Image (cartoon, rainbow, N blue to C red; front, side, top):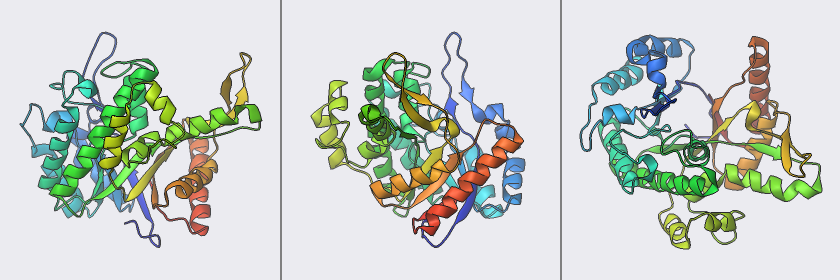
Length: 347
């Protein structure tokens, strides 16, 4: 899939699974909301009718692993068999998409979270290694840490920079353990690590350091996952200041995972121009257009030199606006491929 001389059109089915509830916040299972649990066959038929070759699709961890050590595979058995053997579509499996099972009472703060998520991932790869080749250890770790650790909107509901760093560390530890567990069960596994990237710039030299920090944060989870955070990393002081230790970072470097494809997610609201606000602080003005995807892909390629795939993109616009965004982002991909950069698919 990741040969630079190939290109694959893909689709995806949103698969956020957050089963926890609290006053004012209901559980969120997007397969329930879209009736995918009942209409999965029709959904896959429609996907296949588009002529696509790959689909991003997630396994609901909280449902297939309702108790420690207990698994219920009946539904996923049906879907993956139909998808692969009947429709000939390659799934890119989201092992984790934001939420944890209810029995992990502290969610990502549970000391055993990395162990349990790796145990589950090993079970998935062991069971479906004959059907699945592509795995995403955890979808959008930066967004996950943002909502769970900085904003307090998802379990375990932490807030602020200390909370963000604490959740990010736990998430990345789990990703590392997951990657090693999957490779143990399925040595031929291909990892598509997906991140929501941003693109910010400024014409104001006074703001350049802040923009550099902002752009570095979009890659932070990936840098941690692949063991690239050392004393020379721009965000080393930030991490230590907010609770990560040198031993934590040394462990991540020692256990560094490898990635086959960088999955790039981008939206109009993912960046913009940084300007000086009335209070003297950096603020963002405007949104991205679809052509900015070329800047993001070029920056990511220069940084990591690994093949990439567009794994999510969309725009909150009317039909004409969404069409324009799609045209612009596809043009951006064509531009980058013409430069020799290996972008191998578009979702």
